[in-house]
Length: 229
Image (cartoon, rainbow, N blue to C red):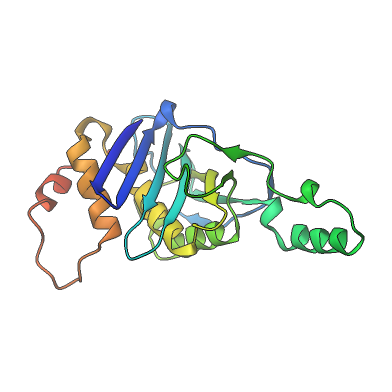
């Protein structure tokens, strides 16, 4: 685990490959888009790559929290398949079942999140559940739609089976930010990663510069992070 502190209001923890925590959960379903890869080839030296990020922001007068992990399995075919796991407890069906149970005076616990994450950056600020709720799934899916994933990854399977959200502090926005960070961590060359470079990567994802703005000095560090071929 690599702790990152951008300032007094933004903290993160990063895990790579075998160190990624098991934030898996019971999934109600998956979104499964597929992309044809024009030039199928394996882009990475290892078939399996994983990355996870936990992020806490207490800036702008509010607390925002989220955690997200993904795994990419390279394959020698012509397709990139993507799976974003959805928590059953956060589904519309579970919400309906909870409402029916309340009307009948029954307990709703069977339709709620089961696992509470204790060791988190949001400890003392919010209750954190191991799952991807609706905001999380929407944040991940919307970000994936804006990126040329087939070009970035090549052929294989990209899966988002890990996640955690705060009862009151998570939002679609923070999961959009987490998705951008996780995608970059998955494809970057592990040999060049340092805490300083990871810190600058987070800065670029959390505070994107306008397209016409000149490159910042720290971009020199990120320029060395070529996608592993």
